[in-house]
Image (cartoon, rainbow, N blue to C red; front, side, top):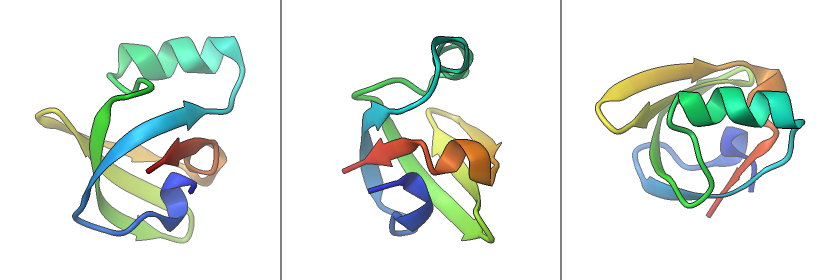
Length: 70
């Protein structure tokens, strides 16, 4: 499911990132990688705030619909 629809405050695993190579490289530099573990902290109007490792990252609607988690 896209990260936008993911439940809040549950550990999730990234299974797919469906975007171009440039964006994938940028997300990797932020720590968002396939098989990585994240937690959704909040979701509002397509904008998602995730916790990854010890940091928090806000993703807009454009990116959050292209990251799939399980």
